[in-house]
Length: 172
Length: 72
Image (cartoon, rainbow over all chains, first blue to last red; front, top):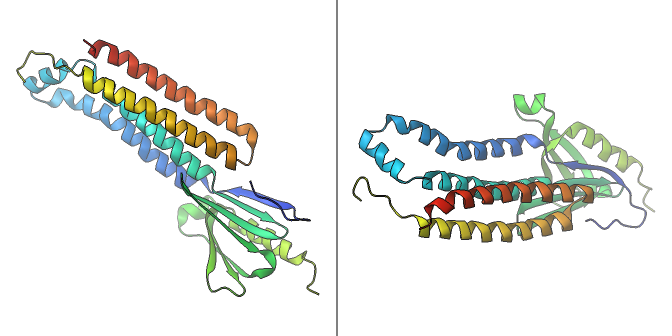
C-alpha cells in the first residue's frame, strides 16, 4: 500500500489493460490442451506403438494433469504480476507500481509539479479499438522519461494529470 | 521394454505428485503474501485465494486419483 502525503488525495487508480494478460493466458491454455491433441493423434500411430502407449495405463493422464497443475501455478504467478501493476494518480504525485516478478517490484513516482509534458501513444489497430496505450511523461530536471505502458484510456489519464497540475498551489 | 509388459511408473508418479504438492504449497504462501501486502482492494483477496486453492486442490485430487492405479 502507498503512504499518502499530508493533504494528498487519490484522483484515480488504474490497472494495466487486460489484453496483454489475456494473450499470455491464451498461450497457457494452448499449452494445457497440447497433450490432448497428442492423445487424439494416437490413432494415426502404428499399431505396435499404440499398444505400447496403452500399456502405460493411466500414466499419460496423470502426466497431463500434472502439467495442467504446473500451468495453473504459473498462471497464478502471471496473474499476480499483472494484477499488482498499478498506476495511482493523486493531486500531488503519479505513482507507477510495476510488479516485474515475484521478488522484483519497481515503484516509480513523479511529483505533479515536475511534470513538463505528457504524451499519449496508441500503437496499432487493436490498441485503438480497445482504447489502451502508453503514456510518456517528461519531467523537469531529469533526462529520463517516465513511461507507463499498456494502460486503459490514456487520454483520460492525461486529462487527470493536467487537472491535477492546474489545481496545484502556486510556488512561493 | 517388451510389448505386453506393464511398465512400473509408481516411483515417478509419486515423486511428481510430491514435487507438485510442495510447489503448490510454497507458491500459495508466496502469492498469498503478495496479495495481502500489495492488494488495493482487500475484499478481492479472499475470492482470489479461494479460486486458486480450489482449482489447485481439485487438480491434486485428480492427480491422486490417477496415481493410485499406478501404485504397486
